Structure formats: C-alpha cells, structure tokens
Length: 247
Image 1 (cartoon, rainbow, N blue to C red):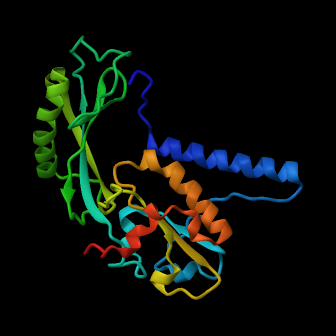
Image 2 (tube, one colour):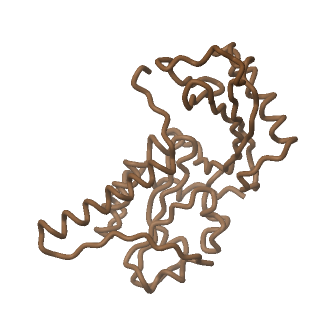
C-alpha cells in the first residue's frame, strides 16, 4: 500500500480533540449560541455517579468496560493481551530501511518508525486479565521468539536488528457472529437497570480494528444519543445483546 501510514494513537486522539473544539468554536460564532467542548478527568467507581450530571454518557473503555460494576459479566467481550517488540539497527550498521519502503502487514506486522526503528507485533494471549503495559523479561522473550520468525519471512533483514524493549495492551475482542466480528454499539439502560433521565451507551469490542471502525461507530452512536433512538444504529451492531456474556 504505497500511501499507507503509521498512526501515533496519542497524537491522533489529540488531533481529534482539537478538531472537535474547533467545530464547537465555529458553531458558536456562526449560530450565535454558546457551544463548549471540554475535557474533564475524573475517577469514577460506577456509572451511577454520572447519571445526575449528563443527558447521555457513552462508555468507551475497551476491555476495562467490564470492570464497571453495572457491566460486569454482561458484555460478550473476549480479552486478548498483545505484546509488541521494539527493535533498532545497531549504530555501527550502515544499511538502513529505505525511506520509500512500506511498513508490512502479515502474520506479524512491522511498523517502521524511520530508517532504524521498528515495532513488531503482535502476540495473542486469549483470556488474559493482565492490563499492565509493562512486559517482564520472560514474556518479552516468549513474544520475540514468536514474532521474529514470522517477521523474517517477509523481511529477512530483521536478523540484523537488535531487540530494545517491549510493551503490551489488552484488546477487547467482539463476539464472532454471522456478520463477522463487529463492534458493540447501543443503549445500556435496560441492561444496567438505570431509570434516571440519563441514557447510557457503549462503543466497545473494536478489537484490533479500532482505526477502521471508530469513525463510523462514533457517528452512529452520537446520532443515536442525540435523538435518544437506538434504532438509528444498524441491528448488526446491536445484536450482541442476544449473546451470552463472556466470563
């Protein structure tokens, strides 16, 4: 894919936030009504803490959504821990990865961060409850032993690169349905028994395809939340409610 890009998630989310701020500012000027878009950081123990302050709350916590007491054992999410290994070319190595050469998507993907740095991923450790981003030496060794042979098939030159570290994360994988593995969208009020004027929604189960689905999932959920009508969301994204929760 000649025009493919590596995305830095933190910078991408920051850019999305600023874009939403700009839209709110422009709407305030053009329509003469005050609109605000702000970020608040607050720890909560349960969803009920938010019910009196908002008209709608959208839960998008990935695998940690199941840690909320109202959602424990109610979402058909499958946790999967993945380890990414980082490699660099030694300083005394003249050969570099070409600036016009692509990153590679195969059994192990290779995301090059310039001519001398690459991230290789990812492992799949199903039913893991380890949310730590830190990787112990034993886990790192196991991951590199799994990933390097796969990476070498598509890029034999990786044998010249040195391992420099590893990091990990948890994917919240959706259930497999007749329509494939689709994200979980929809209203949660019936599930959690909330009877206030606040509507709770979820965007979850994006798994390893969050960059692909997040725009559509966000747009559909925003429209449903504003209108208070879950039927705006296609049934393929809400059919998860009929599936038994993973435990």
